[in-house]
Each structure stands twice: as structure tokens, then as C-alpha cells.
Image (cartoon, one colour):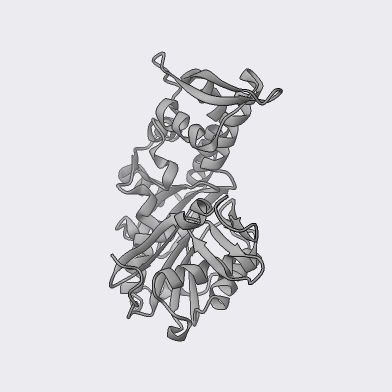
Length: 341
């Protein structure tokens, strides 16, 4: 799909997370699904690139081009850079400021009123005419086809890079919810920290990702597996090769995983009896990039006593829900109201 073509529609869905951001329209589907990174020329203030292009520019362009990651723990930490990121996304999708797009954006349910207003204002500064915020668990439930507006309970847990949240949804709103400002990035950081403590080495982020996906098991399964990876000694800086066992990786993940289980338990324990029965019958669905961590669903099922499933295309469920919001704006009006609080 040629993103340089002008988009005729002015209704846009945006899901901006700590690690990845996605832009879609009802007519053309997902037009952008790349890292939440923006390269800016600090002399002119212009956006040079966003997404993979911004990452590729590291070390290859003028010193005046700086790469920013404007999101952390699921929310914006730099208002101006976030506005420039959204502007860059609009440009990549061929959406001009003249179109004055109507935007539907996801926002973590644990976001503060200040964080919600900042996100809305960043989109308006980037050229949006109006912005509606939909809490991420509701967008995810819509993307999963759950009956969010019916008087039944639907349970969703989002496992993102910077934040995690569990929610029980009924009659178009979150009845009970719980969140933590940690996620996949914290799993990576925990692995890196333990490698530094145990082996005295620093390992590249890309290698940490490989270790996590190849060796980690939320249930602590190891099967004697290990990986030999390239690293650098902390003290001397010398390059070395280190064999990393699955037991070390699993140990590093323990605290974050236990906190995630407690988050889900807190959400479900506050549920009204009737909705608890609905969840017991229908189960819980995991979405987000780290829902695919080996044995994670089984671990949460063990800790909660209910059936837990991982959504297909778990990292795309939220943007798919926002797309449906675009297509059904009139019937979903109640969900598209402002959620500042």
C-alpha cells in the first residue's frame, strides 16, 4: 500500500503505545504499524522520519537530527514531541492539516486527567479537528467482538510494553479495573539487570528480546535450554560470548509476572457476583504484544481459576477496535465521549 497517496477519509484511529504506534482509517485499514519513535531536526524543528525510518537514521544523519521516544509507561512524557510524532504519522498516511481529521485515540484506563488532556491536545496541535478518547480495554473488547454495550461481563487484560491493565466491562463502561505502570520493557530491563549482576556483562536490547522470546516461560519451564550470545564486559568493555540459561531468564521475570497476576486478581475480586459468573463462563482474553510470552496465559489461569486465552493478532486488537469505532460512530456515541476525569 502506497502511504504517499492522499487519504480521502477524515476519520482516523490512533493507537500510540510505548513501543509501537498504529494509524488506521475505516476505509483503508491499518496504514502505519511501526515503533513509537520520531527523528526531529533540532535546528528547524521539522520531523525527519517516524517509525522504522527514525530508527534507521540513528548515527547516519547530521548531529542535529535527534531520535525521541515520547511515550513511557503507556503515556506521553513529552507533549511537543508527541504532537510532532502524530503530525509525522498524518504525513506518512497522506492526511494534511487541511483535512482537519476527526481522531479516535486509545488511552490507558490508568491515565490521569492531565495525561488524557495532554494526549488530546497533542493530536489537536498536530492538526486534528476533534479528538475522542476511548479507554484501551474498551477498544480491545470491541476489537475482540465482545458485547461491550450489553448487561454482561467481558474481561480483558492488556499486556503492553510500558503498562498493563485488566478490566471487567459491561454496559459500555469499565465496572472494575486494575493497572500497573510496567510491562514488556520492564521484563527486558530485568533480564539485562540480572545478566549484569550474574555475568558482569551488558547485552544489546535486540539480544535481550531474543532471550526473552526464545527462553522465557512464565511457568518457569527450562528444559535445559540456553542461548550463547554476544556481550560486553562491564569492567573492561571487552567483547565476550556468554551462555545464558532459561533458568536465569525466568528468574529475572518473576517480580513483574507476579505483579501482573496480582493486578488481574484485584480486578476480578472487585467484580459484582453476576458479572463474576459471566467471566467464569466466558473466560479472560489477553491482548498486547507481551500476551504471547510463553505460558503467560497458563500462569494467569492458574492464579485466577478461570479460562484464559490469547487473542489472535494480540498486538493489533486495540487498533482494530478503534477502526470499528470509526465505522460505527453513531451507535457507539456513548463510548466516544470525552473521557477526561
